[in-house]
Amino acid sequence: MLALNNLQVLYDRSIQAVRDVSLAVPEGRIVALLGSNGAGKSTILKAISGVLTQEEGEIIAGDIRLHGESIASASPRTVIARGIVQVPEGRGLFATMTVEENLLMGGFTRSLAEVQEGLEQIFSLFPRVKERRRQIAGYLSGGEQQMVAIGRALMGRPRLLMLDEPSLGLAPQIVDTIFDTLITLNRETGLTVLLVEQNAQIALQVSSYGYIIENGRVVLDGAAEALRSNSDVQEFYLGFSSGERKSMRDVKHYKRRKRWLS
Ligand code: ATP
Image: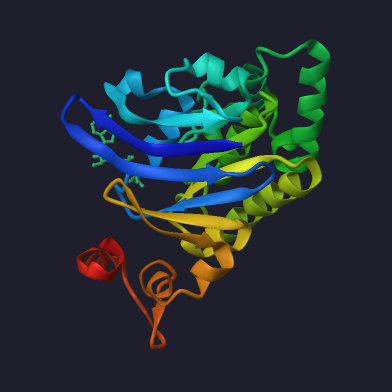
């Protein structure tokens, strides 16, 4: 469905955030992008969404293809119209608007009947969002805001939903609810998902394939099951090795290991 071929992205004509990334997101799958802070994951999503220019970023080489057609220079509006919708990191809700108004913003290109259908779908997926629909979005809990952000993206009827760190700062129970909903959507509607996560544990549980990004490059990729049983992934991303949990500080040391970088 979506393919990135040797993508390179530069910010401010000087900072190379993505050095060489090729990846594939097949239709109907959940694919995870993993990697530590600053690896380039959000930049990859922004390149796909067509919003790089808003941040002085540009694609300097490579291509992004949706069903074989290049969307590398498409506007954000065109990308959405082609069925790709992103839930940004930090959720990007309109804090002073109500939950329902936020949801309606996501459906602005849709007909009235589609908007109504979309709202019903979201309220049945997230009953909490239904309960809170008349409240001001900025006063919701982080988990509720994440549900609204996903709901708003779904109002655009995406074929490919891209999520940037949906678990960030949320309690484990809420994270489970959110990921259960994504799995339901994927199974029942065939929604394709590209998921950026630092929580490798959960990302590799819900996805079928994963890419590990470091310093703007794919350093490892494979079926989620294979990645879960890979000893480097276990040590540096899943936080267990010889029975002892590693801290994020330890995780950083992995960059020095030559094995993956060769
Ligand atoms: P995180 O999990 O911290 O969001 P990430 O893997 O998503 O990390 P990116 O946000 O894509 O990483 O950042 C990749 C690199 O590009 C970093 O070195 C970052 O400092 C740089 N960068 C990101 N956005 C910009 C920008 N708007 N202008 C300049 N440099 C940027």
